[in-house]
Image (cartoon, rainbow, N blue to C red; front, top):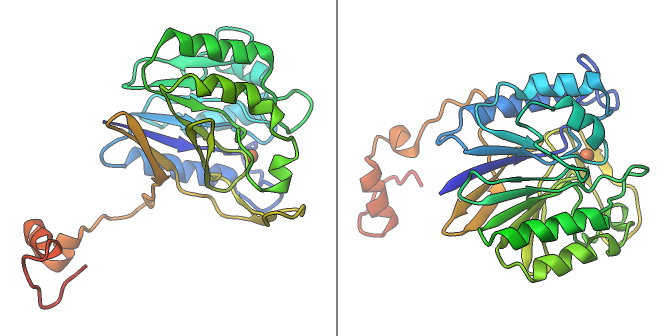
Length: 289
Ligand SMILES: [Fe+2]
């Protein structure tokens, strides 16, 4: 068993600045970091899937780093459309967060019960994704090296979402990735962000989990080309639970300051008694669940 916590689209600005004049993305991230640090059991690894900062400059990355430094877990980041992979490689050099060693700004994490391949879908001149032949060749080569269960992290969703502003790029950019994944069944899950909403889908035979944003959400109509709505609310982290060779994924609420009271403590009934009730073997006058 192993627990991976994913957060995404943190969109950190310099200290004191609000996103679009109304969202305190730094406070949202600080709250999530506190939540992760008190989870029980503790996650084994934290993955932040891009748009780390709103503006790719040293000041924003310095603030981002200060906000994630309290995390107790090994933590990895990948670039999103708001990031600069080149600046990230310079900024995080000598630190464990972004261990890239070549021109693709991609990397493999090998010391977990599963592999993580951190990919780079950043495109230099637009918010749309790019996954060129060099990045594709790297992915193909990495997957040829090992058949260990693998989780792929990429910022943009490599699937058609049914949302016009996400799908405007078309399916071509992930066609090569789909071909590679179709002949690598060890890839168990692709995780992404970018759209600021949660959604599950598929690329080739592999499930895709698109996590909502730590900073703010977007609500988009489906099937019509219209601008999304903006909601000033951060989402909880997503937990990817690696169990029996596969991943079980979903939102993982762990409210800050929550003084956990279990149902058995609240009701004064033993947990074994409650399980007997759940199995239908015991009647309770006033069942707590
Ligand atoms: Fe974003």
